[in-house]
Length: 190
Image (tube, rainbow, N blue to C red; front, side, top):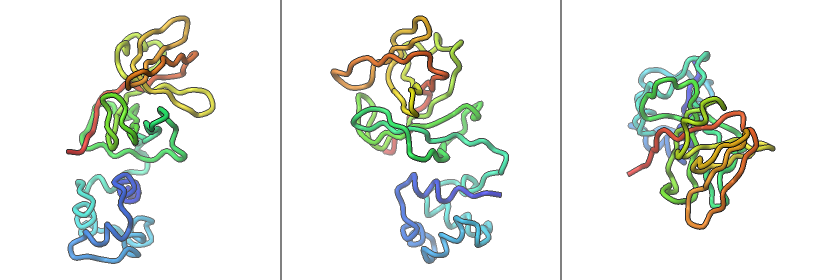
């Protein structure tokens, strides 16, 4: 069994020392590191302590090896949607049907209705389903491992046109994207 402690900790912007200090009773950063890497066994007691420290259900800390989890693939920054240097598991606070085609995007800079700190959960669709995504926010792959994010406003001859969020943005045309990620859920901390 593989654990997700590192992915969840990083998504929450916490260090090993932060998690160790929030455990009840507190422990050391070295112990948390050993639990993350699997050099120390993750018992049910440790799962409960770390789950509480991270503010998640303890069962989210473990995953079966054959699962294909949703991936955090992009972030929305001031300059637009950008690919992450290294995609990571995205931890969904609720279960959505058909999670095999889910992905997530972290919002790092506010744009339009999206605020810094938000997560946008997207469902991947194939080109034959693009018509169902009109007037919806979508993430589209671009050449060179880049992305574009915005409202799908047009689709002609294999090209799609997106209007990025925010005032004064210019439309982006993408030629024959292999897929689109349709925004399905916004996760925002209160």
